[in-house]
Structures are given as C-alpha cells and as structure tokens.
Image 1: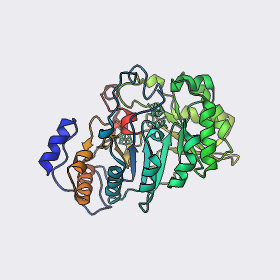
Image 2: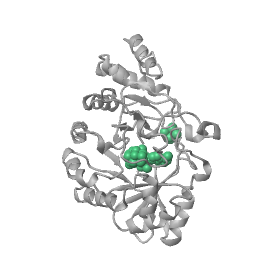
Image 3: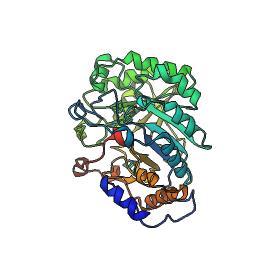
Amino acid sequence: MTDRIIAIADGRNAKALPQSGSSGEPGTIRDRLGRQIRDLRVSVTDRCNFRCIYCMPKEVFGPDHKFLARSELLSFEEITRLVRAFKRHGLEKVRLTGGEPLLRKDLDRLIAMIAQIPGLDLTLTTNGSILAKKASALRAAGLKRITVSLDSLDDRVFRAMNDVDFSVSKVLEGIDAAAAAGLGPIKINVVVKRGVNEDSVVPMARHFKGSGHIVRFIEFMDVGATNGWRMESVMPSAEVISKIDAEFPLQPVDPNYRGEVAQRWRYRDGEGEIGVISSVTQAFCRDCTRVRLSTDGLLYTCLFATQGYDLRALVRAGASDADLAGAIGSIWNLRADRYSEIRTAETASLRKVEMSYIGG
Ligand code: SAM
Ligand code: SF4
Ligand code: SF4
C-alpha cells in the first residue's frame, strides 16, 4: 500500500510518508529531540468570517481566494479515527480550531464524537462572533472549555484588526454566553501588534481582572507567508508584563505542566491571573509536544512547516487503525522541528503554510 500512498501524497505536494514502521510501544513514542505527542490541533475549516490583519489579510484572502472544496475536507468520521490513532501514542489534548471552527456545519456532532474518547481533554478556539448562539449546544455536545480571541476592547481598534467591522460587544456577549453555559473559566487570546493594539493591553487586563477568565497576550508571529511580519511589529511579552505590573502588581506562577505554552503570572492582590505566549522572544521548542492536522488531512509537525504528511490519502486508501497509528509514529520519530529557536530573517520569509489552514 505504501507506494500508492506516496503517489497520492506527491500529487498534493505533501512529504512522502516514511517507509519504516514506527519504533516503540504505543504511548512511548518520542521524536529526535526526545519530545512526546501530547497535544493535537485540528483545523476543521479554512474559512473565516474575519480577515484579521495578522492572519488572513484581505489583499490575499479576497473574493478570488480559493478555499478548499467540501470533498477535500476531512469528514467527522475521518477526524475521529485519526484522533483515536494519535491517542494510541499518548495524546492528552485536542483543540478544534481553523479558520473559524464554529462556521463548520454541525460541529457539535464532531464534538460529541471526540468527547466519547476516554482520557482526552477537548477544547476549541473561536473568534467568538457566533458564540452567543452556539455556546449551549457546544456544552451539551460535551465541550468543557473554550478559548475566545479578542484583540482589543476599543471598538475602533478591534474593527480595524478583524478588518470586517465586527464589534467588540458581540464578542463580549459570546464570552458571557459561554461562561453561562458552563464553559468557563475562559481563556481570552490577544495578539499584540506593536503600533496597532499595544495601548489595549492594560485595559484588557483591567476588564477581565477578577472575572475568573484568563487573558493571554500572544506575540505577533511570522506564521504563513502573507501577514507582512517584521520583528519591529512584535511587542515582547516582557514589555506586556511590565506595563500591566506597573498598574496591577504581578508575580510569576509555576507552569501547570511541562511544556505549557503560556507563562503564567498572578495578580498580587489575588484577583486572578494572566498569561503571555512568547513564541518569538523566548522560544519554547524544546518542550513542544504539539502536532497539527490541517483541514484537508495533512499532518504538520510544526506551526512553521512548509510541507505536511498526507494522512487523508492513507485513510481514504483503506488503511487500518494499526496502519494509521504506525504512520503517525514513524512521522513523529523523524521530527526534529525547532523553528522558533532558529528563526532568522531568512526563515521568516519562507513560504510556510497559513495558520487558518494548519490550525492556530
Ligand atoms: N478563528 C479562531 C480564532 O481566531 O480564535 C481560531 C483560529 S486562529 C488561527 C487561532 C489563534 O491564532 C487566535 O487566537 C489568533 O489570534 C492566533 N493568531 C493568528 N495569527 C497569528 C499571528 N500571526 N501571530 C500570533 N497569533 C496569531
Ligand atoms: Fe479568522 Fe481567527 Fe485568523 Fe482572525 S485569527 S482571521 S478570526 S482564523
Ligand atoms: Fe513547536 Fe515548531 Fe512552535 Fe517550535 S516553532 S514550539 S517546534 S510548533
């Protein structure tokens, strides 16, 4: 079967699957830097109703942009089978993402299917635009937690960043509805772009302080090849912390687990915590246990990869569960990614896959 699969994969410009079976028992698999598989992100759609300037800029994702056809998307059954195959290698967490995952029709059906797999923490990242309508159904399907992205409380700044004139108030309604449905405490992602929303950092912290929700400030990253990333547009997390600390004194908190992406800080007055994700200024590749499944079923071992491995071809060619787990293990065995640790101006301009497709 391997030859056929490589042929299909080549047709999609994917990397050829490794020939050998994986070494090691399920659950013990490690990559070349000794890292295990813990966290899978699944992009359930490459479409989005926002055009965030740092993710899907309008000049590239305009009316002529070709999104994937329905037949190219992994079905819910295919996604669930692959999640089970990853689980054999010790997977602990699944995050549904995109694009905007809540745009995928009947997503609650997929959530119910994955929620049945024992021992998996299932969560989802959304722009919150239609969350007010969907929160109860998501909870009823088995979702336990949610992350909502919101870059500013200033309507003018937020509308300019999402670039579709979407208001802050609707996202706040979504956050409230999710909390009321039992999806809290909610994580709120803020991408900080120098000169665009840096003045939104302290108001954001102030607004959610004492709410039980956790705001996480993310350094603007050079994902994809279209967002015009420059180092000068990155506001280092250290600066975010010192700005907030000047108004609301902070102290560092130990990570919840090894490999946690966000560094945690708590308010000294006991009114909760915030996080910073410093993927540019303090790379955390050495503990990276994340793997990504694109909307059309390519496995990417790094957010900054230029090619993926075609698991959809394998599934659609009739691979058994053992074949799927074996292929995943072999791919993981070969992994040596540490892009953020070796980022240079040259690597930043590589043609990497877009975040909306690979899953943020
Ligand atoms: N549409 C959903 C959302 O926005 O929450 C989920 C997909 S989005 C690609 C996942 C996360 O990636 C969001 O929190 C978003 O802010 C973040 N993100 C997108 N582009 C980014 C970039 N260039 N640098 C840092 N974070 C980015
Ligand atoms: Fe859409 Fe999320 Fe990307 Fe914004 S960050 S364009 S909401 S996928
Ligand atoms: Fe993991 Fe790649 Fe990000 Fe490093 S750059 S933390 S290897 S996804």
